[in-house]
Image 1 (cartoon, helix red, strand yellow):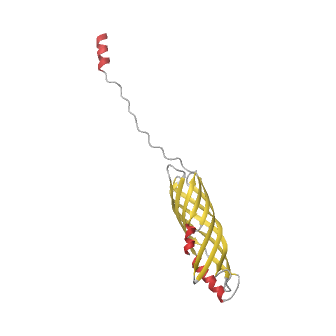
Image 2 (cartoon, rainbow, N blue to C red):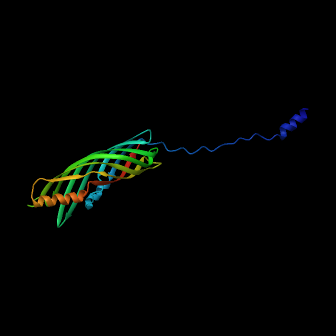
Image 3 (cartoon, helix red, strand yellow):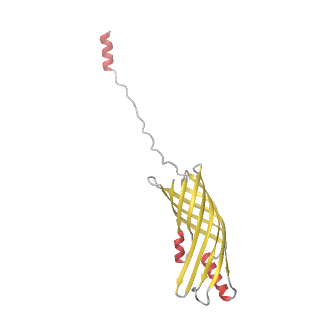
Length: 205
């Protein structure tokens, strides 16, 4: 009997263990973003499609983003036949809903207020016209956020469309003042429908 037991122990297969590969861990969601928007550079080409902005965005439950931004728009034209300079400051609030936690496609609503000054003509020219600008906007937004996996940076492309008429008023009256108002109005937005483009780089943490 001991011989049979020893033989069975000798021939019994060794127990095997199976290991399952652990799924790769998803990068930790980022909830805070400090960003810099650069579409204001197009203003140097007399195109008003978006501002320079400095923003902070906070995510709640990884999907709901609240963003506050300070903005500056500078539209510049310095051709020999026409000089036009506009500087507009302001701020805005945006709500975003992310389909994925902290990244990917998002939808939102945005609103803001801007004010500033404009000048047509050279500073010392007798036909110089100074103007004041006011702007309120409210609209919808869609965009996409990319979060880099190994460095704390993200990149956003977004577009907003809505209602936001610019109000331009010259400090003087007369035909030259009216012509300057029309020129500035056409450069900023010829209709009450506004469109803003966001291209921004953010520190994510």
